[in-house]
Picture 1 (cartoon, rainbow, N blue to C red):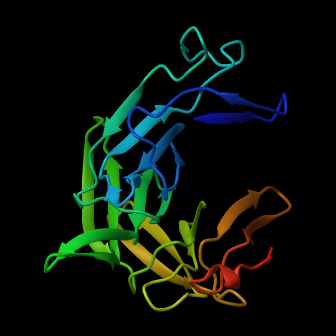
Picture 2: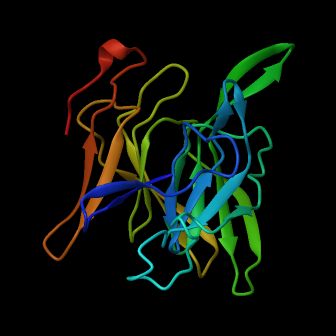
Length: 231
């Protein structure tokens, strides 16, 4: 685990994951903790495991959070496994109203003796109550299976941008908003991107003057020849 300190303008190697590295998944900030959901742990093998670590990782002179002698993360916690036991890669991951939202993604499933990539429209929600008990909610679906897009957590919901399925690349975007009063997930459409985009990155810059999501790079199709320079 690498951490960038904006004060010292430097990188530090602060910890190691408790198991094999999770790749093709996202790390998100959930209530001050780093959460790494599912992902691929070796070629062709996904995991349903979800790990959480304290985000106050270093600089005990600034933050009172205990750190080990060498400044690493003191411990990792294993959250309840993703209900889909095969595990996922490249889902949309974000946080809204203090719940973790994992949507879409791909898996490798065995069917008729063959291993096939499966694209998901499932939405998995992990909620934590006041007593510290975690509960999975899995009664919601995306409008279509998708993966490999970008996800950004905002005050309005988790913005899911672009992505693709087995045959097409998407230009649309949606926002997943949790209603804590009704315990339901609202899915709203956003304006389309100027062109289809997958395998992209996005970030939110929010201040008194702006509230803008920036989308950088990606591909307009499945092949490397479709790589874009958009920003």
